[in-house]
Image (cartoon, rainbow, N blue to C red; front, side):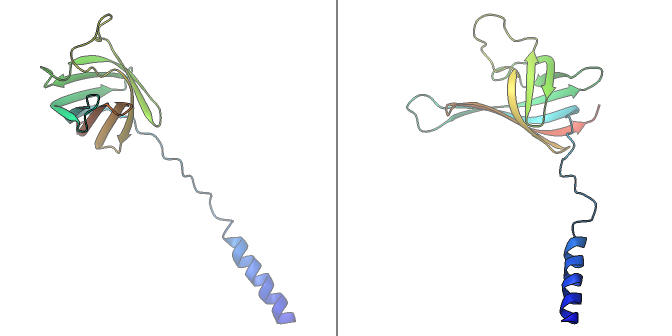
Length: 149
């Protein structure tokens, strides 16, 4: 009986010691994209009733700064698909919201502008953004970091 009691106390001590370590911090600090990024912009559009998407691509360069304020400028192949633009952005853990200062105040723009909300992924090198409208339109940015600011 004495051995049983000692074994039980030892088992409780071993199990309890696993709870005493340093608590884990599973929160990953957010890294704000900053610097120059280059890559491909893709516009996928599906017309009503069609099964396939039409895909249009352009090579772009996105420069983002965080000091003194969060600003961006987009250049590159801006002749037909994507407009060259600049403005400011906000960021949280899942979304980036861009405010394009060149976005037309009236009418419908003829090219895509980096404007509005985007889901994003950034690991310090790869920077991807996505905006979509139901199942007919998808704006995809697949960029890689070129330089730091």
